[in-house]
Image (spheres, rainbow, N blue to C red):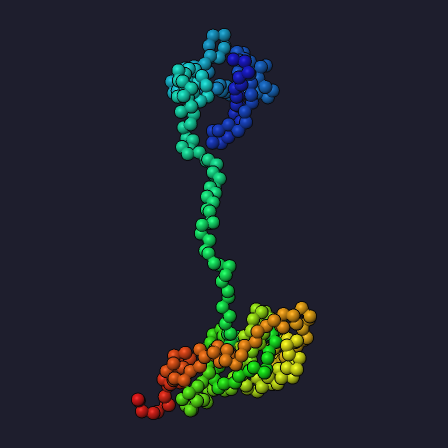
Length: 310
């Protein structure tokens, strides 16, 4: 077998543990192993071992012949290897079944487009008379304050009452005291004068009742309103709290011709309309007031320390 190489070892190439440390390659098909045919430096050594590849034997005329090994499995049948993915004698359908072995049973499919909702005809669902409806005009109590919150007050129509300012978590509730409660010292020691001034809110384009507690800062703010009353209704203003000077800062300006046209069409409330709007905020019964004011309810439930139980 031309081109097959073996290995020759001498005694100098054997390590201490019996394994070869150097190998010189010689042609395996050489029948004459004379010293002249050996590699240089190996002809004078008598201890020469020739190794051959496993499975080869030397036949006649020094030719190497393959030996039969029973531990090697038989060669595959060519009929079974006719094609890479099919077996000889199978149909194309059977072959495709074998070729899909190991493939996912449900391959990925493209997502279908979403279905559009069917259009619904609303011509028969329109409520009749919607265009004839009008907004309900409600004269509400609203505390307008802050930079840019412009309003135009009318001091000529203001009304003053004794009442309470109940501060809740996010807002204030103004409660008017009337009837027997005006003679109750437990209530009146917490009460103060409150002026309700009609004002046109330029943010919502409606007339509201602007409450002003007549304490020290409130009295000063009402005095500023009275100075500007000579320009009514052709002015607007805003009120902001000045913490450093502990008072309300009132800033005002004259109206533009367009704003004057708007304020000229405003319908200001009468005294009767103001009283009717404030009626839900009035209390003349202690139980009703305690139910609407947590501070009054707690005051009535408390008692002086050391007093006998009631």
